[in-house]
Length: 172
Image (cartoon, rainbow, N blue to C red; front, side):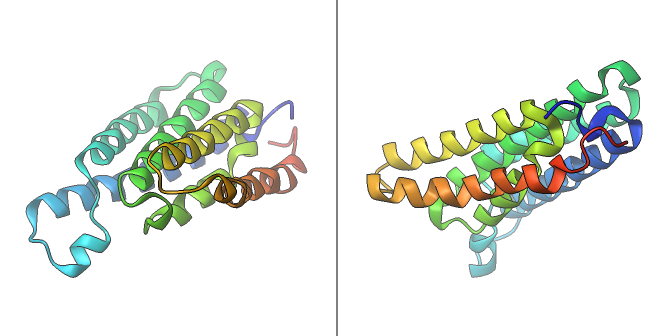
């Protein structure tokens, strides 16, 4: 893996913007669910408070690191932001029907960027996927035979991230 894209201010800001955008949407959907009534649409995109709080934390930290991260710490800040993004999304998926969640595709999409953040991003992505699978298994939502299918569902984007982002290794 080696050097990741986030060594420049440009790549750090792009990754921070993505985290800010997703976190902001999670926070807005959480607030909307708390303020508005329980219509069918609201139930489909309802964000539980715990996911909204984690999203708000990610939003604040990504916003702060966007502006004040020194050049020497851009990698660490980007990996922190990615970890917070995955914590937000994983919590969101787990608290909104798990494997049947409306937001599952967001987790799969986020995993496809793991290699962008170097080996640290891949480890964080794998841990996020593992936490999701373990939660679903312990909750009795999936069977042991479904673990393989879910591991593939999340593993393919992780592997794909090496193909997508690994080719640009060392470029800024």
